[in-house]
Every structure is written in structure tokens, then in C-alpha cells.
Image (cartoon, rainbow, N blue to C red; front, side, top):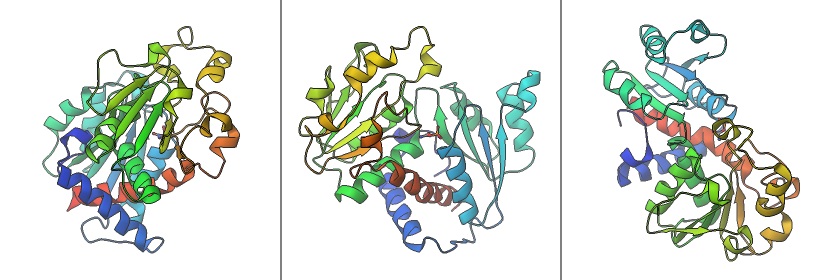
Length: 302
Ligand code: CP
């Protein structure tokens, strides 16, 4: 694997191998898994958008693999003096990193950068605008398998701001390829795709209907930073129609699990009782993110 820019560029074999490798990383946890291929290599986190889970779990993953880590955030950097993404990237590349993990809001910039990088430098997409978030989709698939044994035949609801969500986009690809029976997209009309997405995808216009018989419910926050405050729905209206509460969860399968990529807006798209309840896998997703990202970094450096 040269870079990880998108889940669609992973073959089925690469996808499976990453999930199995994450399991092996988890099995050795919390022992140090220092590998010759990664020991003392340098990973730079280059983040143009805020992050807690992705940035820190890439850092923890790299350190568990014996790597050195440097963090760049646009705020406080020469980006504030007008430096372009290209020039900032070139400056960091001149310091000879082995892996650069990038989050940014421009959907096409990563592919352009990847065409120009040094031969031994690997790029990982940590979220590019609304387009894709491959490591999140991999950790979500890993978490569902851990909980359910398999993704095959499951009815999976993805609810909320689908159209602005890179998490939804990558999960639709990965969960479909891993055999989900039905991927139910659900949200206000303005948050739903206008075109059919894939043959496994079914669009619902009411959360109460989408969750009936669901095995997995993945809630998404409203991406206010992409919509603007004036076009964002009123939180009170949104809570009434689109919030996953205990009553709505009761319409799903008795063993339905609840997921959320975070950050969670409690009381808007999910109640605290559900987010903190026994069906919630939210913190398990975060924990698994370290193992999955160890597997990704390890695959790139081999
Ligand atoms: N899920 C996710 O990408 O979270 P962060 O924005 O905190 O990294």
C-alpha cells in the first residue's frame, strides 16, 4: 500500500488484511509492538481542521509502533501568514518524514499532493472535506465485526447530516463491500443525497421508520462548519425529529448497537442516555481507532 487516500482505492484483499492486522495489534495491546519497519521512523500529523480522536489516535498508534511524531496544526503555523498547503507540505516534506497524516477541507488536494511526493513518503487521509475518511470507516467496520462477528446480512442505519459527512461516504463504501444487507440513509431532505448511492443503499425520510429492525445505528452530527449557521437546522426541531433517544432505539433489534464517530452533540442527534447506555459502542470505536491506525501505518511502512 503506497498511500491511504480513500477506501475505494483499497482492494478487497487489502481491506480484509487491514482489519485482520488491527486485530493482531489489539491482541498484543498494551505491550509495545515495536516493529523494525516502523522503529524510529517519523510521522507528521498535518491538520487543517480541528480534531481530537483522529489526530491523537494516529499519534498514539505511531508511538506504539516505536515512531517519532510531530504535530502540525494550521492554527499557529505559517498558514496564518498566507502560506499555501503546497508550500507548507513541501517544507514539512523537506524534513524527511516517512508518513504524513493530513486532514483538510479541500476534497481534491490530497490526490494532487500524493502525485508529487518523494518515493519513500506515505500519505494518509485523515478526512478531506465531505469526501472521505478512510481510517474512520475502517475502525467502524472493525468495531461492528468485533460486536456482531460479521457485517454480512446486517441492516445498518446511518442517520443525520449524510450529504456533508465524509464518515458516511466512506462507510457506505466499506460496509457495502463487507456485505451489509441494507445501508439505510436517513435525515432531513437537505441532508440526503439527491442521486441513488449504491444498490445496497435505501433512503428513509423518518428516523422512526429507518430504525425498525436495525442491527446497527450510526448517528452523525450536523456539520455546521460546512453548512453555515444560517442554513443549519434549529437544534430544538432537529432534536424532535432526528435525535436517537431510548424510545426510538426500542424500535430496533433487541441487540442493536449504537455508534457515532464523534464529536457528539448530546441532546441534538443523540441523548446522553443512549450515548452512555449499554448499547453504545462510541468509546469502543475510539479505542479501536488506535489499533486500526497502527495497522494502517504498519501496512504503509512494510
Ligand atoms: N471521528 C473523528 O474524525 O473525530 P475527530 O474530528 O475528533 O478526529
